[in-house]
Image (tube, rainbow, N blue to C red; front, side):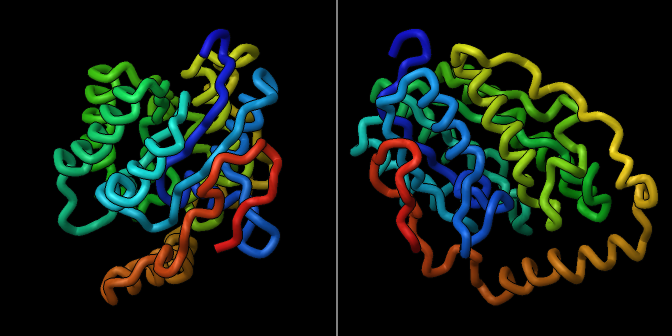
Length: 265
């Protein structure tokens, strides 16, 4: 690779990388990885792109299920974003989770790939009911920073920027990025990778949100509606030992030219 010219991009991860929140399962998902592939294609039109992500996967599962296939595809650039599903579990261990992420960093960079990742914003600023999770996010971010530094992984530091917790960048479930949010993530990763034409504009705050004036201060009723509509079903799946990714496969398991149809799961 030189001057941002990549030939094979492979994305590993969970629902965020799969593209949940940007499109749907009927019309198709897009997501930050598709958007990043498009940014790479603007520099290197011959690039091919695979997305191995599956929603609901823990970091250990991403490593066990996606790392081997990713290495087989011989990427020269890869994104690895995992750990959010872990930190939402009752028995979260930041060291164990980060160890799985670091193992993927080591294997991919060792195989010659340029790897990029992100730190996670504090979702408690979007969903106050999730405030107990904030220390977990900080702990995981600290370990991701150290692992990225050890392996020369490009790091997009989304967590320090106020724009990252603007409600307009998040889907209604407050767990996944909206289309605008996915676009910001792709811009952050492009900037971290040093793609020509990328800059730090993704860090800047959005203008005033006039539509949000009435709901600027979230009420207890709004939090309860969110908990009933999104958090409750998520917790129920956990109690039943189920995942949103059960029965799903990667939507784009092979390297294809950017813009080619994805594989339905």
